[in-house]
Length: 396
Image (tube, rainbow, N blue to C red; front, side, top):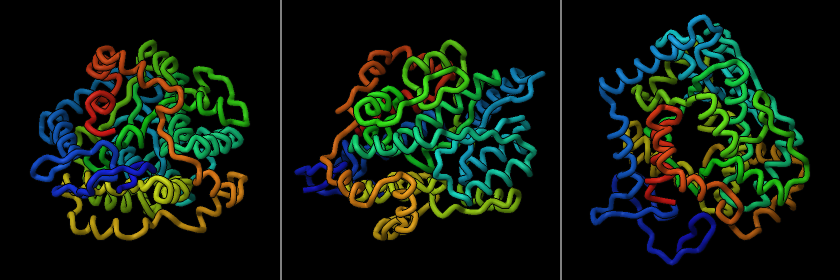
């Protein structure tokens, strides 16, 4: 018996011969040679976004278009930043390599890592970039994090994810900026199963309606708050043609090289772990391990192995140890900020596990709009990975 996302499964245990992904990942399959479906999906994405001169030409064409559209405007684009390696390096490239005039936007949910905060201030000061921080109403944020715990799914950061996306679109609309850059790369982070990384503002609303105690502020185009469902996405992406781009899909991104550059040029300091720009991930990591038997390192390290940025032996050794991000002192701080007791947290941990499809959401509606979404991706309103994730991902 294996625990998969909190559920007991009567399946044999197997680990991929190429990466370190294993049977604890929902929906994973293995071919006759022992290679997993995550590796095959990675190879498919590499065919869509190859690391070659053509990809760089495509990126340059996009950059030229952004510059032309930004002529006589204050900003060319938005770069979402958190203070972590990926977003700070993206900001550096945007200014120093690509010559754009970005507006840096950060979403603060009340759990920012102070180290990451200093990284953002240093980077923006040295690059001459304006930093705009959208600070959530902590009463809403706290309530939504407790909602996520009560909902009992692996999506323990859904509120902040939706709030971040909404903040970026809201600022873009307010400033009439048509392009949002974000620092994600399937080559260094991988693509998580949908049940571990489903993004849906409508799901958040339905869970809040059932479990929430504090009312959410109403949506407005410039201040969307925690509202970013299908209607809001249609408003921003289709009606106002605000597009999102992940430049690292086209640009050769090596994490060690990026760290050296931003440490030297921008006084960047490693926050301690990937995603640790937000301290709440310490609590999430603990809940994932204890309740769901989830370890995101298996996804991220596997991506780095495929990209030849980490060797498999090192990755296997690392996942044997408890993740450094799971810090007891930080977890205690998070519990205190949530305004709950350790006993209440343990009650949430004891709730039966669920998945996002146990609550009203927009996934089925999205599946009905397969062709329009594919068209939107081909027009550059979303990355092609969005289509691949929701319609071709071979694991759930």
